[in-house]
Length: 164
Image (cartoon, rainbow, N blue to C red; front, top):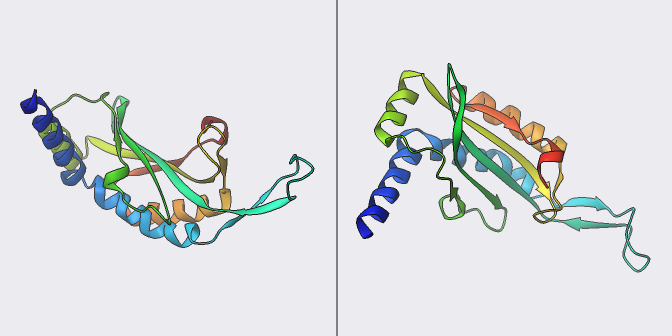
């Protein structure tokens, strides 16, 4: 049992570090922190009578990391996560999927050869899970910056309908 846990942790570590995924996620964090630092004015048009018409709310970024093949395209989800200005721990907030079971060495090798690539879908949002609202202007600015920094990966943003 412990051997299985150790090999799974070793697989995660090897994939996250040797594919460059952690470097990309840390760079995404850096380019988005300036947008997360500024609170968002949320419109409460449909608020109850005793609630204010608008309020300042904190933003966070949510993301998923998928593995793609140049020929087949989507192979599966590797992990996902979120962070905010108050909680910026990338590795501590990763939620790993079990969709990809290929050996880590094969994944690393194929990414380095250009046969596979990471696709990172993200969005800067306000609200809580099940009631996320996108902050489109901030997301598009972060998307442009991170895409320029890491042309070896592909980036996309969540469709607001897919968030909840």
